[in-house]
Image (cartoon, rainbow, N blue to C red):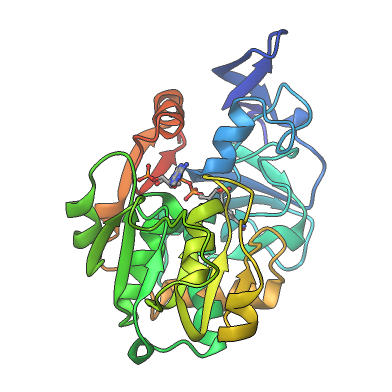
Length: 333
Ligand SMILES: NC(=O)c1ccc[n+]([C@@H]2O[C@H](COP(=O)([O-])OP(=O)(O)OC[C@H]3O[C@@H](n4cnc5c(N)ncnc54)[C@H](OP(=O)(O)O)[C@@H]3O)[C@@H](O)[C@H]2O)c1
C-alpha cells in the first residue's frame, strides 16, 4: 500500500489521570503485527469503548491508544489462506480496541483467528448495528433457547433495555416470539422500548427489591441482564421454577446480593455470558442467526450513525446515561 497515513481517534494521557480524545493522523507502520490488514468501513460504540476512552486500566493499560472493540470492513492484505484481499469481514472481541489498536481508526491489523467472514445477507453496516453489544445480546438469547426456555413458558425480563445489549436483546426476543418486559432507567424511553418489541415497560424501582427476602413471586421464565447488582439479584429471585437468567454486564454494580435459595429451591440457572472469549464455532452460529432468523427488519429504529469526529459527543452521552440503542461509526473512505 502506498498511502500509509490514516485517520483515527487517539486517546492520550495528559498526566493527573486526564485523558484527551482527538482525531489524528496515524501511520500503518504503527499498527501491531498480524495476519490480516482490514480497511474499516464501520465500527460501533460500546460501553467498553467508553471505559477505554476515559482511561480505565481494566480495559486499556497503555496510552496513546485507539479504542473500538468492533470493526467491519474489507481485507486489504492477508498472510492467511483463509482470507483474501477484498473479503468483507467482521472483527469483534478478543483484544481488539482494548490493548490492540481498534475500530475507531480506518485500519486495523489483527490475527486471522479473530476474523469472521461476513455472513451472506449481512452488510458491514448492518453487522456493526449489532457489533459486540448486539452479538452479546444474540449470544444471551442463543443460550436461553439452547437451555430450553421457549416462548410458551412465560415472560422474559431484560434490564438495561435502552442500552446496546438490552435494546438488541428486546428486539431479537420479540422477533423470536417471546413476551418481553423491559426495564427503563433514567430517561423515559417507554415508547422506544414498546416500538422495538417490549410488551411491557417497568421502572428500575419496580425491578429492584431491597427487602432482603430470599425468594420473590415467580414472574419470569428467564432474564437477560446487563446491569448486575440488585436488579440481577431481584430478577433471579423472581424467576420461576426451572427458569434461566443470563448475566453479561455490570453497569449498575459488580455485586450480586443473593443467597442460594433460587438455585436450590427453584432450580433457577444463572448463565455467564462472555462474548470476548466465545469459541469460534459458537461465534459463527450466532452471527449466522443474526443474519438469518434473527435478522431485524427495523434496524434503523435502533441506530444512530455518526462520523469519526462525532464520537466525542456520543461518548459523553453514554457517560450521562442519555444514550439509547446503537451508535455506529462511519469511517472516512
Ligand atoms: N460479557 C460480555 O461479553 C459483554 C459484552 C458486551 C457488553 N457487556 C457489558 O454489558 C453492559 C451493557 O453494555 P452496553 O454496551 O449495552 O451499555 P450501554 O449501551 O451503555 O447500556 C447500558 C444500559 O444500562 C442502563 N444503566 C446504566 N447504569 C445503570 C444503573 N446504575 N442501574 C441500572 N441501569 C443502568 C442504561 O439504561 P437506563 O439509563 O435506561 O437505565 C443503559 O441503557 C456493560 O457492563 C458492558 O460492559 C458485556
